[in-house]
Amino acid sequence: MQKTTHLTNFKVKTFESLLDFARGKVFPEWPIEIFLEVSNVCDLECAMCPIFSPLNPKKFLALKADERGYMNKDAVLPLLDDLLKHAVHVHCFGYGEPMIHPEFKDFISAILPYEVLIDFSTNGMHLTDEMCSFLVESSIWKVIVSFSGITKREYESMYLRGQYDAVLSGIKKLSRLKRNCNSAYPIIQVNSIAFEHHVRKLDQFVDLMADHGVNSISLQSLITIPEVPQLATHRSVFRPWVEGWTLEKAHKKAEEYGVILNTVQYRSEGVSSEEEYEAARRSVFNELGGRKNGRGQDNRIENLKKLATQIRYENSHQEDIVEKNINLMDIATEEALNLLRVERSADMNLYCFEPFSTFYVSRNGSVKPCCETPPDAPAMGNVHSREGHEIWKGNGFNIMRYTIVNGLYPSKTCKQCLEYTRYKKEHEIVRSLREYAVWYLDSFKVRFPNHEKFARRIQNCGANSDIAKTFIRNHPRVDIFASKEKSERGRARPLVGATSVDCPYNGYVDGIVDNDVHGWAWNCENPGEVCQVDIYDGDELISTVTANLYNHDVAVAGIGSGKYGFAFKIPERLLDGKLHRLYFVIRNQNFELHESPYYYISNLGNAWIGR
Image (spheres, rainbow, N blue to C red):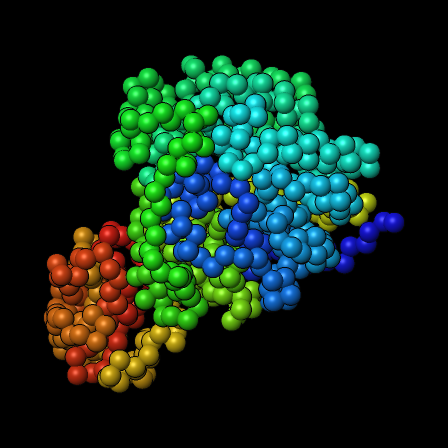
């Protein structure tokens, strides 16, 4: 029986909103993709996993850093109804194994009516006959299986408690059912880790995966963590003159089989000379391999299971060390910026668009801007206290977006991606649109409206950097601080921007150059008066400056003699990397200058933060 679509107009509105953002008009009204952390528990102990690895002495501390369990669909999905209607992708996974959720099929079934691309990442241990039939019949978009190694010994040495034969059997079963039902879905993708021994045999791995009906393979760099130094020497670093030949051979085989082999991410972290390669190896070994439990051990892959039995685990001796995420929906912007630790990225052309497109819901309901957000980072909100769309339009997400279009990043949220350069270099809106259009045609037997027109228009807006710069041109002084924050601070003051009709005084805070804040102030009824400007850091009076300097722009504007400027050198004690809210008020007149308060963080250089 042919399915009928009911939510097409909602999806169209999402792409229209994304197009408006790409043209620099407004931030997206809806996320294009939603992550649902269906489960944050796992039945495997993968050696490279930062949470469940048995080689990590801090494993139990990592496990206690969050409440473990399964997401309650009846408690969460109704709160996301508006977002789900507009979403295009729904990823039913997070940091855990989703298929061990006792109501996994019911969870997926509850999302199917939203007409979205559903995918999930799994260890592949639970692809039973019944489950495979359900996935094919439901036209799930993609199943992503984590798998590395071409032999049982290699695989089970890395994916501890995993069963090589069971996973391969499940993949083959799913592929066979697809073929029997003449279905293109679900796409079977294998995510594979670039261990050195694995990359050397990548062409054989392509043989193995193709034989079991895999549609695509994605090779990802191994991320080593200090707690698991045993893996330091197993990280493959791409060298075009060595691994390049191996990848070329693997790509040729993949093409012959009709399998998509994606090695872009792995190659992007490569080196261009032997000197760079040796430096990269030394860097990783010095950081990880020299740690206790790193040297002096037999760290061969096949020995990892034995090493895991020798680990002495640290424990806090507390029943529960879970710390509740700080919720940015409930706190003032000034405090939020301090908590997020906003700073400039070393890559001046980095504009990550995840907070403009992604809405990640953790098992406990806390919301993140992407799947790479550390567990201790402040939450954008919590769906158990606010509805999804309110969080999407709320303080946390807007702070993230405004800082990013200015080339700044909240290190508390983005540190992992910035450190390992794991962020998406460019947005994937067009790819998502085309993937959705293909699935939509297959599912509903009609074309998604104007998808190629949308794609061309979004492409014409350029790369992430072009979009960000267009947005800044259209919003040169974006105000990320809600008007409610202009609250009383123990002294009465008029609304910012009072005109000469309201009072004779006027003036502006123009900006900052080399830690000097410049501005001007005058009395239009008495141009000869020299104004004194009091400067407050929050509630504390920190300085008073005289507004008697010549200001060319003021003079050109025909404002008196033009000698109404001032310059304020920010004191050294405020150059502490924290956010300061500076108020500029004409003494004894209760008039606050335009663009006051001025928000300043010393480690951001001269970037405009907002007022």
